[in-house]
Length: 241
Ligand code: 6PG
Image (cartoon, rainbow, N blue to C red; front, side):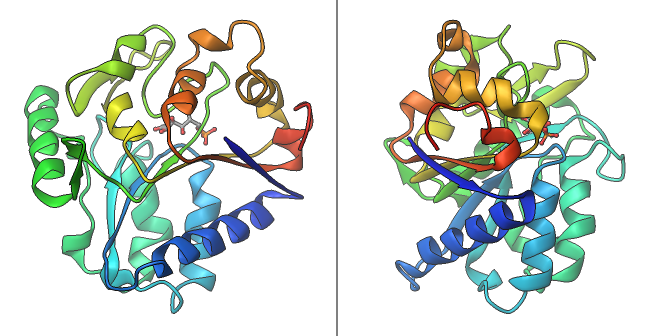
């Protein structure tokens, strides 16, 4: 696991974007497959991409999927795709075929099967599973990541590619990719900012007591190349930056 700490969220987003460009350029002949998380943190990254990387990323080579999606209409304010569309996709020349959203608005069991098939059909396969170049994760204050919550650790080793999950507080349904798909990726990045995340970042990054029961900690340990991109607020309690 590698830690990258920068002064504020814009700096983190800028440096992470530069790292992504570097990974993309390792083999300019290949497409680049990214799975995006939702929540509020990625908004800064999408802003940087639409403003500063509009002509630097080769959008024709980038294929976008979702780590998880809330089971709502894409126009609903909670939609992860809706947020990405508003901040990013409406402002860049990415071909529509390159954006593979989760249909949060349809029957969840049907969509889990449809999205699983979509992943197998359209993402390169390695170890018998979809092989993303980059899975971009957030971190909840309860240690969840994707929509894998502490009360549903079975999703971390599920044989399924996608599953229906339920937020433990709101009860709202979500569709999430599972732990083995995340861990199969070439690169996994936890992008976490803000003072409010400092304690959970400390627990997960420094493997404090109790961390072994947290989805983010368990998944971190399964990834071949895992990064924590943090601002000073989120990193302020970790032992070594
Ligand atoms: C989601 C995310 C979820 C998120 C964390 C952090 O759909 O909500 O995928 O895992 O990454 O909850 O959310 P914030 O970035 O809003 O703190």
